[in-house]
Amino acid sequence: MRLKSEIWVRAYLRLCQGHNVPVVIVQRGDAAAGAIFICIDRLDGTVCVYGPAPAGLTESETDRRWVSCFGPRPASVAEADGYLARQLEFDPDLWIIEVEDRAGRHFLGDAAVKD
Image 1 (tube, rainbow, N blue to C red):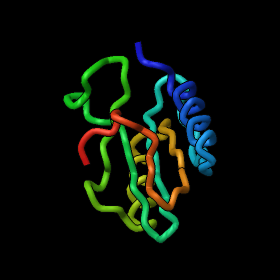
Image 2: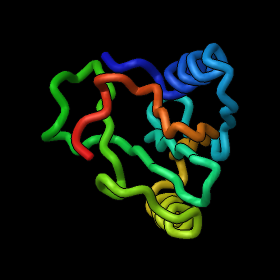
Image 3: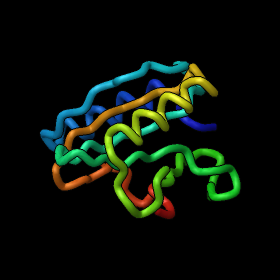
Image 4: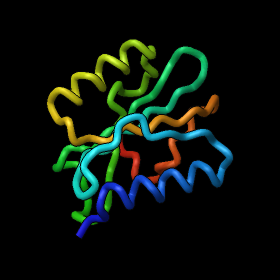
């Protein structure tokens, strides 16, 4: 059984705060099962967005896995905002978490699959 989204988000916030990295919840989603998107603002006009990996890429029903929504390249802030707005139209119960880190660290560890 997978952790509820709200519990996972709270743990992720604490992880980022433990590294003294600013992190905020931009969009609060469904507490139990809302999809989660992580937006890493590199503070240079570019962002990297990580979203849920498609079901075929997951190795386990209990672990969350992530993919880079724009592949290996960072996106512009406008591009990322447009992408996330479209995702919200499709699924209004999703979470959007924004991290500000010049180094572009996502703190997802090995859970981040494929760029």
